[in-house]
Image (tube, rainbow, N blue to C red):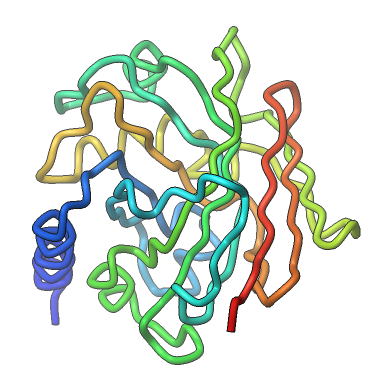
Length: 225
């Protein structure tokens, strides 16, 4: 299977979601770190799409709706304008309405997350759910240097900075804008790539991502049955 095949499968899956009444709210980037690209044997990121049904509104991640989820901190970009290719990182910055602290829940249909690059793309880049914090104006913040501290059940898990996402979150968004067949539009939220190693989510797990200057975001994993 080729990468083009994988994106065709992804598109068919998104079309099924739309037919079921969901709406696209934005996009997400995967494989944005050099370490992950090397591990997957690729030299570029990939992308997928987020729908309204993926948003967690009360910080509670419903494990019953997922398979074997993991969560990672990310910087999300709320767009004030459409992005029409070719797009540069500077143009993404100019089109940014706000930045949003984010925890993305990734999930996979493949057992034990044993995936190839094409598996991951076909599975909508492992998009599962997403938890957003409060939007914050860019205010001249250098997203490369924007730090995050991740705690799991009150214990320090990891620290990172925005440069982990393709060296700059705006560069990641620009890559998606130039790569995808579907335009990133005003009002879309683009999740720019994982900043730390993911955390396995099991019943009772509580994770907090505290971002320098822009606030924090929390998620609590629960299983009903």
